[in-house]
Length: 111
Image (cartoon, rainbow, N blue to C red):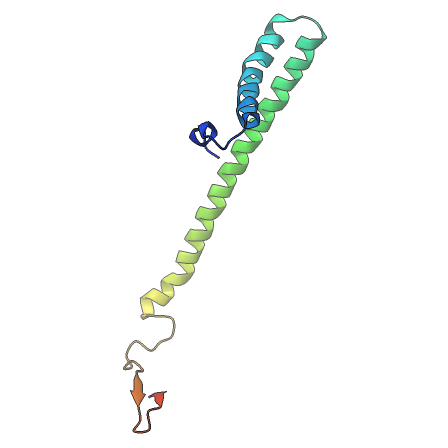
């Protein structure tokens, strides 16, 4: 779901309220942590730490998935390199291609 699809006629008010509520919380939790010396500020500071760590873990996961994909691609290319050097995996590059032929009775076969 994209942000522009939230403004179509068939979308109810709940997704828009969720986006607005998330935006409000992104603004209000740091504000509360900096300006409230009581228990709400203490909990807001804990939430800031937890969400900061979660953000860093998410970045690490995305980076590691990207690195794993690149390492897998490089490994596949390195393993295929000898096959490219010898001219193909099957070793039949110097043989003529097999083709369909039709016998006088109308049957197809390879030769």
